[in-house]
Image (cartoon, rainbow, N blue to C red):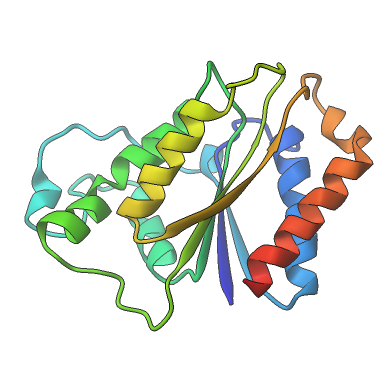
Length: 189
């Protein structure tokens, strides 16, 4: 089982990464092969809406996003992780998602699907500072549509509220255990 984790937090060793690392512990314990991409370390330009991907299944912009398409195609499970910024994913995550327009074009305009034997599943992992009742709604909707475009069926989320100060996630052992369990579920599901 190959699990690709896309970490869209701009902060290294921040709360999102702490939560993701616990999730990875659980998945590795179940024997999964895991690759983590920190989007902050990649130069990904925003989609320019040129329509170049409407005829091919690749974006015409030559940047680091080109490295990610094959990784996405080779994954059995995809986890998109991002803290919440103003009720949605970070700018880094959104740029990545927007550049997956090429994969949407491949699926919906060109009629090409992943073609694997088993359906691929996708997940969302997120933290936020506030405790608003609907704080994750916008991000979940964004991630669900992005996963569909990449030919993954949305299969759940790990969401933690009330994590503000850098490193505060490390002080929540119950949530970290919940993340490990989430990782085990992803790897065995």
